[in-house]
Length: 378
Image 1 (cartoon, helix red, strand yellow):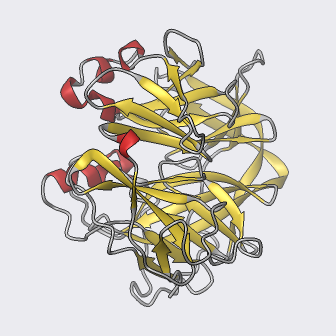
Image 2 (cartoon, rainbow, N blue to C red):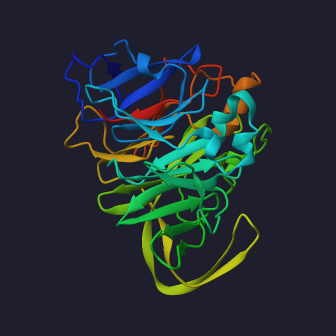
């Protein structure tokens, strides 16, 4: 067993500094429950009534981003404070995106992900909106969300690293963003080559091949063929920037993960990218690549719709080192779930990089609506 259990907060030596799992009830977005990581007990759950009818597109440590499913308001919420402080962000109707403004009763769902540049109240909020995952941003106190230019296509994740924002797109391209610079976007990695340095030893899959194509945008379609890279995550761990690749089968269930670190090349190379508006940009001196790694140096990673987190297993023995704890955040699976095509209970679990084993938290049933679990520190 990779992880023994989940438990109530006040029992069995809970490590409250590790992330907890907010999980929607089987009734959908009407309710959320909180699960705590433990090493020796499978306990029940603590309800969180403050999150009734809230869509949660992102979290950073102890901050949640909430969107009213029956309204228009967006807030930052810190559940760990005694007064449950709510900080308003620009409303849902202020996005400069037709998908949100014309999205109907479930328009909140088009805000696929919101990332905070820091855990301070002076942070910038960055939203990935619609099927193209258009990057929009705001600061606390702004009245509207603004579209970022140049508009990069198909951004999957955002992280703050060494004082800059980094974004990764669906082919593994990495870009640094500096809002204060004259050149706001710099290509750091041209693309991810998943065919190099990968050894598949998984007993459940055998010697398989997989497509180097994240299927995050094939909404409503069935995929027949080998496992695909369903999404990418960026996370800073032990001072290094890592790219976590999540591999799903044609049944949309997570099968395994691969992890790469950002490394400098001996010689620079030329890069090219196309913006959402069709503009072609050339980067003359790209100096980094993604290099595969086989373990996490004892760290634990927590990925999903939250901003990814890295924790030391030595300091937090309630978890296990060299493991990736993951939640259900596949947009394509949402559509399949609504159409009754999903056959598994939930796509939440933990993957051991050393043993190459995956354990699903089968007791956590998914709701039938577009709702997701998310990691949060308290």
